[in-house]
Image (cartoon, rainbow, N blue to C red; front, side, top):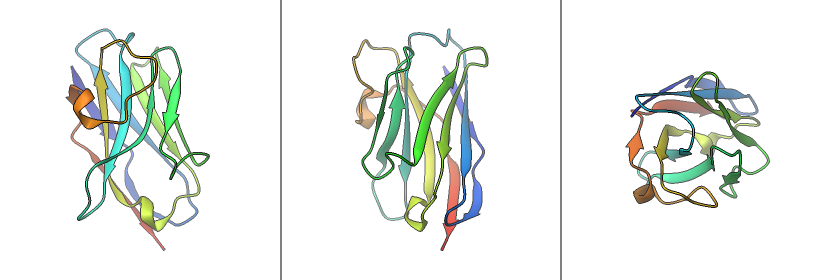
Length: 124
């Protein structure tokens, strides 16, 4: 499995940005996907996740502002980020695993495949 993020960049506080994560190497369906981020000097943290059935889960800091979605026709995962804040500045990673679960896991160790990351910088 290969994952490749794109869509990062420099935006102003209050702006929106959509990250994409292209999936390849296996059949897209039945995977659980997650978005994580790592700010300078901080540990990587869970942002949001989605099951192939469409069930989603979000970190409290982004709930109501960020939306995770999948496009099965394009084998692509998305992270729509609205009302961006300075504290959203980080490298964003997409991740995937195929174990059966009822909710996307918030733990890094549960994900087997990772993208290389894309930088999101929000200026205040």
